[in-house]
Amino acid sequence: MAYLLKGVSILGAAPTDLAIVDGVISDKAPDDAQVIDATGLVALPGLVDVHTHLREPGREDAETVETGSRAAALGGYTAVCSMANTSPVADTAGVVEQVWRLGREAGLVDVQPIGAVTIGLAGKQLAELGAMADSAANVRIFSDDGFCVADPRLMRRALEYVKAFDGVIAQHAEEPRLTEGAQMHEGEVSTRLGLTGWPAVAEEAIIARDVLLAEHVGSRLHVCHVSTAGSVEVLRQAKARGVRVTAEVTPHHLLLTDELAAGYDPVFKVNPPLRTRNDVEALRQALLDGVIDVVATDHAPHAVQDKECEWSYARPGMLGLETALPIVLSVFGEKWDLIADRMSIAPARIAGLTGHGGDLSAGTPANITLVDPSARWVVDPAELASRSRNTPYAGMNLPGRIVATFLRGEATVLDGKAVK
Ligand SMILES: NC(=O)N[C@@H](CC(=O)O)C(=O)O
Ligand SMILES: [Zn+2]
Image 1 (cartoon, rainbow, N blue to C red):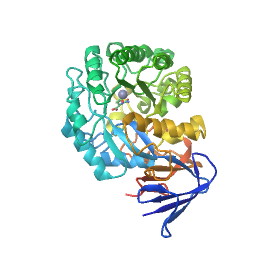
Image 2: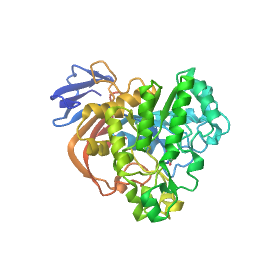
Image 3: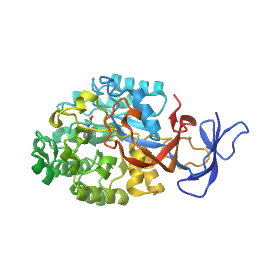
Image 4: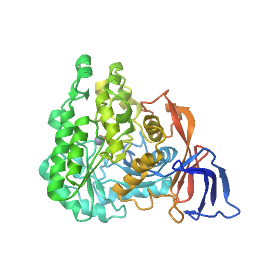
């Protein structure tokens, strides 16, 4: 199928026509191309998420590779990196290949598995990183996300190991001794509510240690879900020294604050926790400056019984794929070059996903997101494609509708609806 996007604005530029033929972007459409009136719509390179939890294998009641892929496509994504904290853990070539194959079968986005750093995410022994790298899944990012690789000697070894094939260790930065029993950000609000706090320094201390380790080894570090102003300062200094470090921020940390915990609604419980207004401001500035490289969703679906319970028993995590671009648009406005870089180009580069994060020029793979920036919509959890319902944005009126998504020239979303 060929398409002609008539009158589309590429990254906010003057309207033009964009043709999609045989999976690539083309100057000219054949006569039988399906014409899409794209007046007022903006084309972006397909979004890429470096931090998605798909829950398969093991918690298919919360999400599957297929339902998560559909949520991703509807959110404008053409590739997602799936985290390793499944059951069994993605710590062998067998499991990462299984997830990769399920992604291919669903065929809605490219699913790039992330491998665990340590066996069972237990933080004791390195997993078979080389075998996962050499597998059909071609793993390049390794992470124990959900847990921190807290042992500095293991972290050093992991950084050394992946250097050989230009892999990257994605760290969930949380010094576990400083967060025992933690329920929310440690500060004024946690004191008032009487909940055990997760201090900012628990994140900052690990990032400071890890940028030094990455510098020492000369290897690549990626910092997951940066959440504090202090972390931004550590990263700023490390980057100025030339350390090979990249970092992500989530849409929720760019918008929401710890005040939301006051209602004890566990939909706002997440790791790292929602922080203060001052942190939110610093994270926004860091994304603008490039100190933080990418927006990553940390899409963390949880079943109803794991979320709709008392705060202290609830699992941390919130949905993100279907609301990420609207949240970023509502925070930054129509800064299309920024959005394309932080949500597609830079994440594709970090994950090594060639074919994604392109410039939409003729001859490049047609991985495209078509957005209507002027359409507003109200988030209804029941209407999300994710199998879970734990969105913190229920009832919010957001700008930006994903009209269509194309994966190598095939529409995965058309008229705002999933094609399969
Ligand atoms: N972010 C979360 O609060 N939860 C994530 C794990 C993680 O990203 O730390 C999950 O797997 O549910
Ligand atoms: Zn994490």
